[in-house]
Image 1 (tube, rainbow, N blue to C red):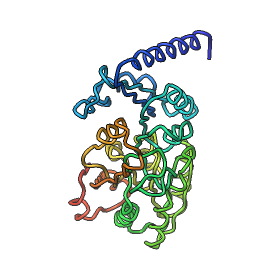
Image 2 (image 1 turned 90 degrees about the vertical axis):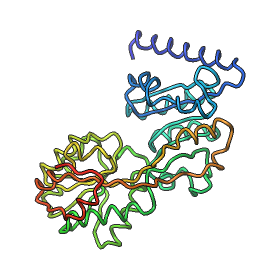
Image 3 (image 1 turned 135 degrees about the vertical axis):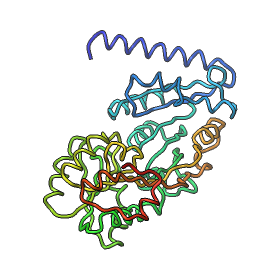
Image 4 (image 1 turned 90 degrees about the horizontal axis):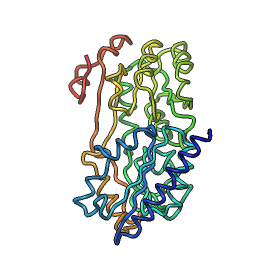
Length: 322
């Protein structure tokens, strides 16, 4: 870090500390600290746009009146996330907000007492709780997976790729709980009689995995990876003729083969955050499971991979790209 950058960081920190100190003098002020994986230069735009917390106003929390929200974006740099998490805790925020297991772990490493709201794939596998019904740490929020989801995903993979002989589960090597997150998929694959293998890679490490899969017969890949380049992954999968499934609903629009995910029909984020701001303990706010499924398939990509999609699957899909 050069002198100019260091000076700018010191000034920004001083201004932020002044803002917090000033807001503390306002009776009834609540402080919400956000730690997000988006690029740092997007934080201001997020705070002003639809990513902001204007929806908290009807629940009694109005920014500039009794709510101060501080946005920090770390752009996928998890060492930076650790620093920002510690900074938010030092400032004495009332509630912390994030999404993704890595940034949630960063916040929980910084505090075991300040309530944390998060979105994560699997709260139990990630180590944030032993019970979805009664959280046993300072973390609660929305689960992005459902106990029935892995079996349904494996079933679809077998329907779309009927000759599949092996499933490769690809995850982010930087993700602390990556292997644990695949346990349910490994079990579902075993129950379906499909050998499965976990591969943890860097974001740039997909090509060697796909190349090996192409050389080893009819295989398919299920990918669970934060901050993935959907378009590049789809191009590589087509080049190496690897059928792939992702959670990401936008994957098929970039040429990916299919997506099957579950989601929350109604965004409950603000409701849960408002409860935490009012002082309700995370232990008294059960984790919420997704309640709607979403299946999408790209018929053009299927054709390129030599796959024939059964008509009933096309009719079942929520989105079809042709």
